[in-house]
Every structure is written in structure tokens, then in C-alpha cells.
Image (cartoon, rainbow, N blue to C red):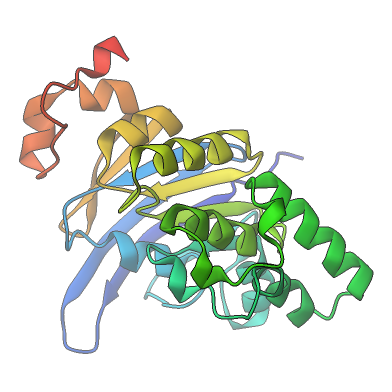
Length: 247
């Protein structure tokens, strides 16, 4: 029996209550262990698509599955465990007195034994290089450290898919490098929403471009970034002097 894809989206259309049509029949398939960048200009529908992956939003005439499990009311809790979303602002995910409390929050809500919670917290913090910060208040950490702790809060749930929203935004060069090293070492499927094209090239062999609520490109990241006409047509820009063929 073949392994189901980590993410499967078929014919996803979605309109907000004000009538704005954000998605027009999106199809996306991501295999287990794949690393895919989701690119596109502001307003393209990227966040709307991501919020369908764990049932926060629900479209019409749509099939959305996570590892073969349909995203719907019946499976919503299990789907949200399997798909971990790391939001752009880490302070949206860090609200407890200590780093360890934040990372333990999800596993405790699952009702796991405290010994299992403690083990998951230690493992997640080790994976993001923040084991020494377990007893520190999150607001005492640098922005880059808080972002890595936000990743740990998701890893402690042992997800199958990690979704990151603009993970490199507002990071200094050291924080950007440290986060990249963490993400490169993770074993799960990764979907990264980003405007940072060099980061997409560094971390994701495949890129999908969403524009105007439809997928307009799906190609190897290096091939896509080597086409300046296509990039410009979808308001995507490489940093001045960056040559993807030389990386």
C-alpha cells in the first residue's frame, strides 16, 4: 500500500464573508519529507491556503488531507497535531512564564503523562538549540531565540508537517543562519511561506508560486529563481546582485 502524501489539496476555492474571493481552485500535493517553499506577492492567498491545512478555515467543493486524514470536524484535533504552524510573530505563540512552560503547553493539553511532557520539552528545545533557556522568561530572549522557541512549541507536538510563515523576517544574519541550521536538521515535511527567495533556495528544493488565488508555477526552486521574467510577473524579486546559479 502506497504512503499517502503529507499534504493533499484539491480544487480549493474560498471566499471571505465580505465576498473577497481569495482562492480559485488550488491543487497542491506535498510528499512525505518534501521541503516546499510557497511564494507569492502580498494578497496572493498564501495565508488563506495555510489556514485550510489544519481546519482553521474551510473552503467549498474541496478535498484537503493530511497524511491521508481528511481535514474536517471529525478529525480536526488530530489534524492540528499533525500540522504544526509557526506564525510570523513568535510572540503570538509564547505567553507562559518560562520557555519550558510554553513548549509544554501543547503536550499537556493532550493529557500526556508529565514524564512524557518533560521528555518532549527537552527533545524539542534540544532540536532548536535552546535547551539552556528552558527556565528563562521568553520575553528576555532575542527575537531570533524566540522564533526558535516558537518552533519548539510546535515540535513538542511531534507533527508530521511543519508550516512556517515568513520564518526569516526580522532576523539578523546570525539569527537567520541559526534558524536555517535548525530547519535543515528536522526530519519532517516542511512548507515554508516566504518572500525571502535566497532562504527558499537554501531550504527548499521545490517552490510553488501562488498569485491571484491560483498556483501559477510549481518547479525546482533553482530553476524558478533563474527566470527573472517569471519572477517579475508575480512581484517576486531577488536581492540586488544575488545569482542563484552561483549558490
